[in-house]
Image (tube, rainbow, N blue to C red; front, side, top):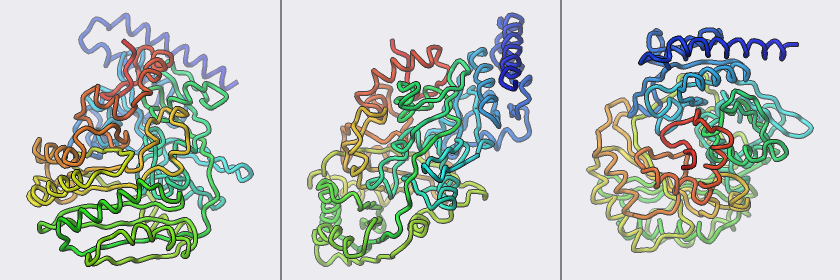
Length: 503
């Protein structure tokens, strides 16, 4: 009965939209008026430019951006999301979903003025089937919510990043890599079904058995095809024990020593060590010297860790002040060593930054690393921004999945670099302008001027269309465009780097 009543209500809304369209479509602000009129009839919490909370609600996590959405709506059910999408489609207003709002380019606000933002923060239910281990999580949940719930309800685990406030929506859509990634794969590799609101306002299930083409697309490019309102994840039994480790080095490394350490790490990653091991190198410069720290997790015993890590440790040059600290943990303790508390009830942080990424399927040459270290020491100390670089050892279980199994395109990489420049005082100061972007671009180009791939969750909005389509989606672009025509033929879900319709 409820479904029939809802269908009847939907038909009434659509007729009202059409009536309104004929009445005011000729006016300059007709689309906005159609949208607002339609949404007002839904009874969904909405903020527009005239609302008192609009300013705070439309603030980007990356304060480098400031956009003015046409409206921000806060649905509580998938059916409300479906009606909202119908309103936007009728008004020809671009639609974006906001899960955690941490898009580096503020694509959760549309990445431009005038988008309808569907904020999913009121949709946070989670359940775990204790027999199957399947977890159903609505997209308003953040990584901390999901990780805490599945641990509390069955001691379960998933691979994901280390920032609790990041939303599950974008993270699962574009990859989802973290300290458990080489062992268990990407977060999207554990998606077995998605509940999706499509461009025509339908609510469908996407899985290997149902709408399999859409299921392929949402695991790598979901925001271009619909709004995923809930994910079904195949969770794993949490490892009973693990080893976290931290390497530190002298803060007075010479350039030659820094080059040797970085070369050792890259060679180690390229040798594809056991999938039980994850390593992350952090690189900065201070007082003219390169600072290097290596952290990671080993999912196994202390003796096995020593055997796994020894090829890396033995390749470090002498007299570099190397020190190793380890800690035995259970899954939860090991996770929170790097994430901090998983609770997300407090205020979120923000920043003011520009970032980009590079994937590499091999170690870089000594000449390339030398050029990179020289750039860091010569320009990094006087850079217009504060900055750091993270190098994730990649591959392992990520590479076990065939490259064409999902829309996520880059599984052959062994290294993932993130180059991150931010304003001083943790983003509270204004962005420095083009000089900051130029420095970070130079930082990346000094290592690799022509990268073949990049990580789409570290999105760079300055790339040209040809660049981002190749770097983020590679050989999958043609299929993605054909599926765009199938599932969103009028380009309802659009933002500056959404999958375009085929020409």
